[in-house]
Length: 311
Image (cartoon, rainbow, N blue to C red):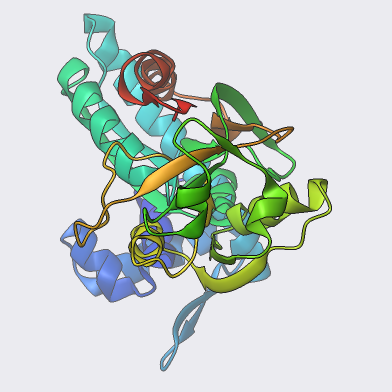
């Protein structure tokens, strides 16, 4: 029989990088963490961690195989406790969700606030990042669900579309394209080729945007490759290039307060699905299922519908 406390000590030591940090997290001594992990290794009959004085902890091959199983075991134990408490009608426990980095500022805050109002006993946390990082988090059990643009999703991940969004052109009012094409006009991709592109290069967004051009045999003139949506908007507002983006904040100004304009793209341009994703091999908790249902209700219906369709 595995001791759940020992398993928890092992997972926290791996996640925090040192036994000292894990001890601080659990408010116990460092020696207690070390003894717990040694006991776990003895019970399993294998070494899970290499203790390196100068470089901290490193997983052995056995430890790498055991880590996702350990996370799943802890999640199942937490689910059993929370489900038992939920017999009284209220969800409890902890839930971590992921969100694609550029969508997080206008997707997550509203979801966190409204979900907390409905389920105040659930400790909801999140991680944000590019798609490959979120996929790893789902496979490793560091989050149960992730909100992603459904592009180049790898095997073992299930995606359920929440809405479809179209790429559009973001411009400064001073840009030649803004003067050439009015607010009601659609901009052909070939008209963009002679101007500088500010490319949002957060995987898989960069490849998707360049793929939009490739569909019509157009080679974009990339001036900047960046990973920040707000920096992109600021550069475009300064008329340092145009951008093709999917996420559409309600504000039409940059951080500096400079105006921005948008134009639809002349088709055919493939739409992008914004989806909720989970590990196909993992059993979703009641909390995860409740959050998924919350997303189905809140995202399309209330928060992100506007001039360019669902956002």
